Length: 286
Image 1 (cartoon, rainbow, N blue to C red):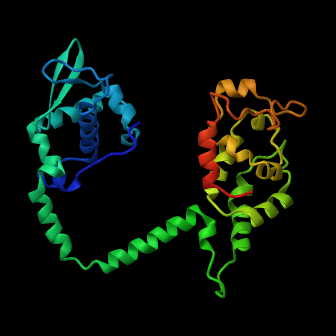
Image 2 (cartoon, rainbow, N blue to C red):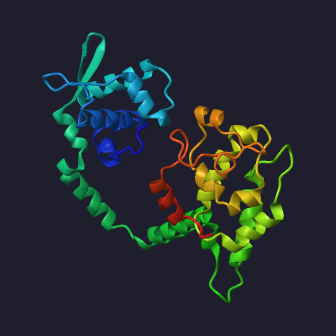
Image 3 (cartoon, one colour):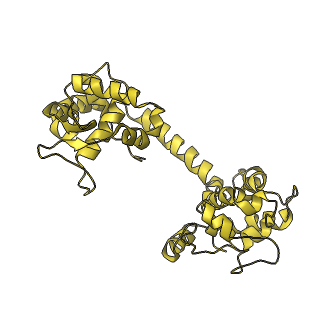
């Protein structure tokens, strides 16, 4: 999957007002692959790059396209606009960017951006800055409840109150039960109130992955206090694989390494010692 999609919306709207987001996203994928220096890329002697429709679909799940035909239609429109050229060799499509496509490159289209900048400079900026500050504060508080702590002397919630609320509304509802009964709530809540100082999302990633593990689905979840006290969430930053679930059984009496049968450095499941050290630095101090 392509994690970042770079779209020059100003140029697209200026030169191709009839274009939709699908055109820009698929063009960005073709451009990235054509410009890739990877040795796995297949190219012809005259500079065409092989790109399958399946690869474009896999790279861009956000398009929600399910058929190669839908991709072919968009690619044909990109060719009609002279942004790309392609040829078919042995039923495989090979693509090449055109000179026309350089209009979508900011570094080669400074005049258009000068027009944009002159427009932006005439807009009063403070309302936008105020809105952004408010948005960023809200987003930060959502991800990290500790950021809601108010300065001393105010009427807002204290650290202990914020942590307790996070435990009751986020952690405890998500934590798995053992044969229908959740264990260790009182001690787990006390632990959160006292120790939660960092990225709560790190803990919840561990909870969510652990909740989907085979041992939990069979009804043998450990109590929540032990999960927090022993920092079990560190070992569950990745989902359990099929091989991992077959090899690890957390049932009573079977503890391979003192972590309830979970192997910290299993190649199919866990993180490396170096990754673990980095993750520890990001989370709470026990």
